[in-house]
Image (cartoon, rainbow, N blue to C red; front, side, top):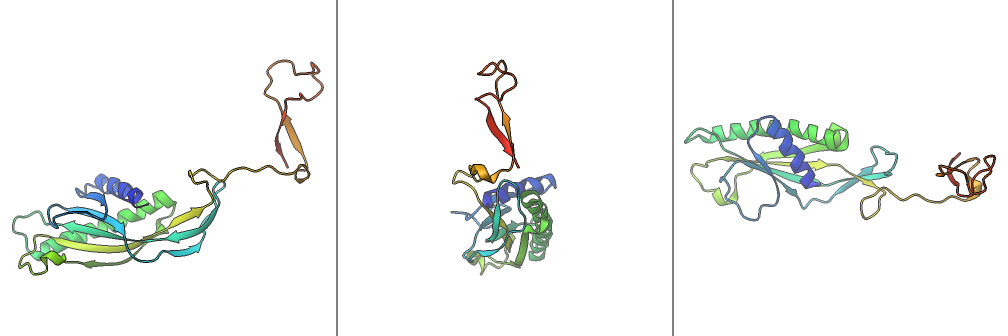
Length: 201
């Protein structure tokens, strides 16, 4: 799920002229202010569960699982020697663009913009730079939830398999043959023995 969010969020922001890359987290090794970027990763919070929000014809939506994710935004004002407030202002502007972008991501992935919910956001000075007299950027953390529909499917991801009903379950049937010429008994008034039951009521 995270990679799908990362991909779609990155594509939307790029279309809006936002120059930041969106990355799968956690980062294994990174210099805090090496570059502006957005990192999305799992949190230690327990998933929440709720009722199905919709029912689709072929994949039965049984319930909704709602994990919590963390988005970390690393921002830097473009001007040389920028003041702290300039870095923070850029981070806040970018954060608000991300909030709007996530509405579009959820609408695209879940067919509804309210399929995600921001929980909280805050400035989060990196621990390795807490004592720095002049930070060269700003970091914002956003916690959010994103619905994940739980559907009936096979392990390979296909829709649930079809099943065979007993003969008494259907009140009518239609017999269909793939034959393109004379049938097996050369009698046009009878149903070919090779015909199969295609549908019924």
